[in-house]
Length: 179
Image 1: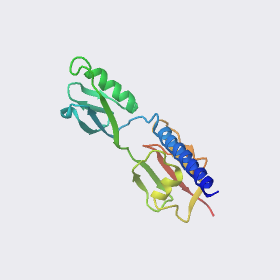
Image 2: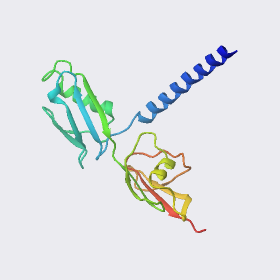
Image 3: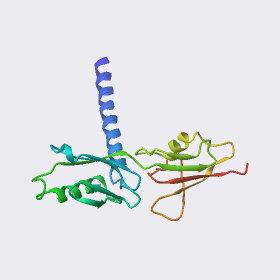
């Protein structure tokens, strides 16, 4: 009986681990680079081509041999392909390119929170976690009147719940409640 219980618990642990890692991968899937993101670029066997840089205001980076590259709006995979295609043939026969995000651009939260400001974004972040980073709601902070302005949208969207996903570059506004 004890052995069966151990087997079941082990199976559940493995299943939960697989689900968690899949959720993490899904959260990172499709992340588009934007100004303020800090990335690292490595080419296997070419240490002199390693570059850690931050995307400037125009969303570009300067990379050796390739010059100025516009990477804003591209995923990490698309950026890898851009660099691969630029280096392949003329500079390196078959470049093995790695691009990773070292530091995500911040999100901003203001209004009725204890510590308004800009905070480091982490993939998979929810509204609840963002509010916690800002020290929680003030006494007058509304749980219903919360708006999120996305970088790509001019108008704000109302947060549906505290599980609403937050993206890098978002601005969260916590309005005041009346009672």
